[in-house]
Length: 259
Image 1: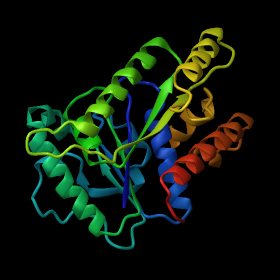
Image 2 (image 1 turned 180 degrees about the vertical axis):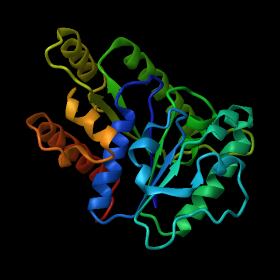
Image 3 (image 1 turned 90 degrees about the vertical axis):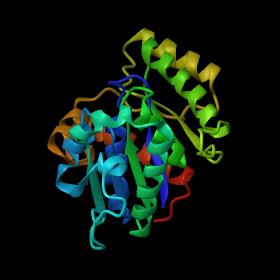
Image 4 (image 1 turned 45 degrees about the horizontal axis):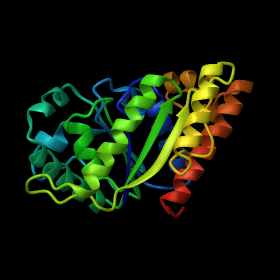
């Protein structure tokens, strides 16, 4: 099982939209997918509600050491939904949180999932830090605005620290790979965004995903309806479908997932 975390320290950048469309795409490809929603806003949990299991996300950190909450074998997508218990996560020491998360990941891996996708809150708290220490890959959707770009710079520094810094009792995650910054909610009619994209391409050519996802109503409609955007039959949705499918293909290839 490979693990990907979607992360950005700025909210409203299209992070959850990207993650749930990865889940829908991988499911259609025949992969067995687990989704963990660590964001207390619970947007991924809303869109993927039909796949909700008995577990909730706080069980990962505060539940029984040997819980019986993993999906049965016939399930091909499991949502471990966000819940109010996550508000207590910041009280848990980071080494303990990482250790508990790793044990839960081991139990999920035992259920023969192909991929685990983790959605995170837009802040550098215990949840996001724990996710970075247990994950194999990071994908960072970004909005082409100043605050989002500032957030990604901080995240890149944090990823570097996770790769080389030992938390007391926890080894660094030396194998953590950054899949790139994914420009999201892009509006080519705004000169500011066009300019910011050009600056990012110049500053981080090797860290930028080579395509983007536009600002399209079809994605919001899909998320509200609990379906992927390619199931909505409008012109804007068709364009969004091509973009989200291209994103999934990029992630699939770079994670070396087999379908």
